[in-house]
Image (cartoon, rainbow, N blue to C red; front, side, top):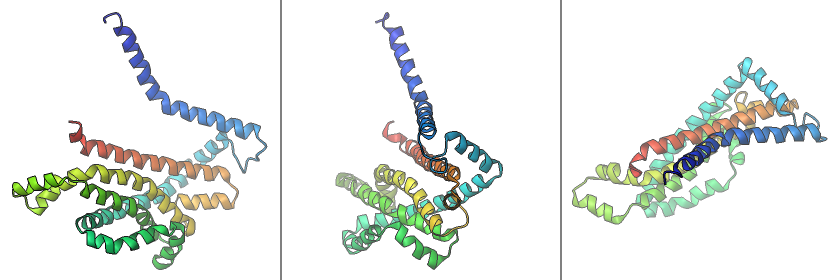
Length: 264
């Protein structure tokens, strides 16, 4: 065993190094493939700009502050919509999970609201609430609402009846049952819905900005499309990707911190 220990340690070191370099290497491979396609294909630059052109456009928008400003606008709409959608969905999900009759009454309307594409509802919300940020927040909250609602219902109903009997035998009141049993038991499922909602919230805000806005990353994409400034479109799209990945990663960090007891 002593003779095998150095080789085992070396293999573990290589494995850790590969995990660390996995994302940079995949990003480098993507850029190389993108550069090769843009260089050797017959596509004009306004259809497929090179990575260098997109990088130069990124530096321009970064230096003049326009990228940071529009990213800040979109991020504020996304975070507000995510918070509103999550708050309403978790409260309503808990109520529906405790009342099957109410769920049967409201479920057709909830499902019908999700059957309508967001891009079809967005113009109505902009007409009703104006082209400002409120309409974007509502669109984002609407698209976040359904997955968190469903996961909340599933999480509350996944609590074992034996655990309820145990809490009742200990003379726990409803608030104690909620805080000590239902929330911890449902939290893993609810956070799973929040992961989905975190990425969908970005889509909702951008859809609203496409329909009517004079600020935000969706507005930048519209400007780039209208002026055939394709590098600007790429910059805005990559900014949205980074934003969605950041929100998803933030939920993972929250999940690991609040669910640490599961692995303890």
